[in-house]
Image (cartoon, rainbow, N blue to C red; front, side):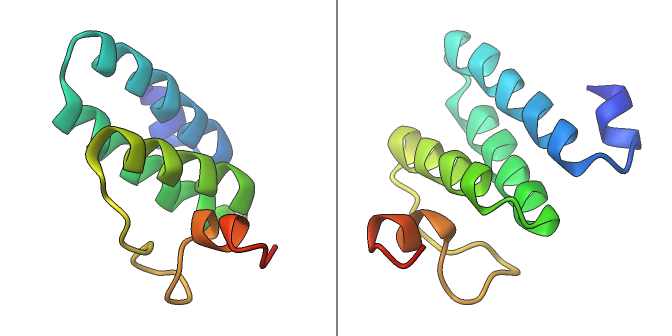
Length: 87
């Protein structure tokens, strides 16, 4: 995690956060898992990786019911675009 966080490899950092989410969910730390998923989605979106961003947001929604758009997005999440057939 430390290497990914300090690097410019946004996808790798997002992937590390997704793996961390697995561990946090197994430990029943859903709030922390949600935070990691939000961070992963944001990193993926910054990189332009809308598929991975959508997966992170969908996973976040599945554990917490969160459906709001990414903060820096265009007013909607990639997950919503995918479900709506916009991508």
